[in-house]
Image 1 (cartoon, rainbow, N blue to C red):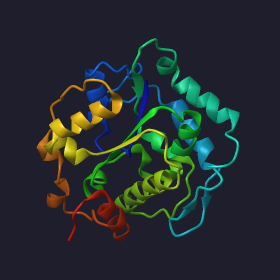
Image 2 (tube, rainbow, N blue to C red):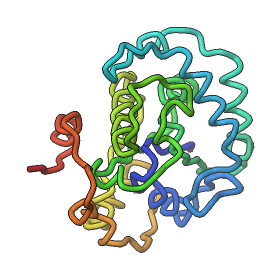
Image 3 (cartoon, rainbow, N blue to C red):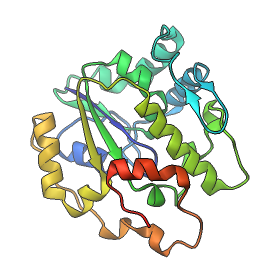
Image 4 (cartoon, one colour):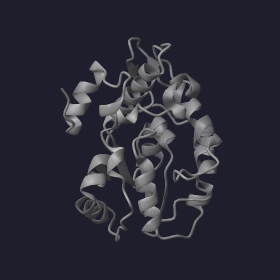
Length: 239
């Protein structure tokens, strides 16, 4: 069984990577403290190849229709296979990988690996954009957007882009959607869902309740109008 995690940086994806490792799933090597497969450069390069096939429409809207239909460039396939070498060549029965930038190339990952198990990991965007991540500036990965001088706004647009790219991609055969907050406050039921989905026993790891709702004491801007529709769909409350 092959597994991957789809989720933006700072959405709590390290918790599921650590959970899978603790459950005997080989997550590649080496890993950093966040459970990301290293070295990441070939994945970053693959993101930049992919971005060339996304049409920017202005006003933070993107057309992903071409990436869903065009031939996948051999350069991209080679970069992904080289990045995943330790995973793809492992004899482990259950294996996978996690790095947030996988979300930036999600449509082509689904086309390369249609049969694998996808875990979609989401977090309240108001918490997700509080900390910095490499994907805060989408320009660094070749993605066009209406860049601003405000880092919070850029992070929010990055969150939106990664929601849009998943929404625009035909759903894979195997998909499980998990909220980070449910892993924190309802871990037993959440890991039971993950166990049923993967068909293997899932270990518990320590989760920190104070990682949820941090935006409530934040002094900066953490809510954007374009969050509202997705927050409703994901079951998050807002005023």
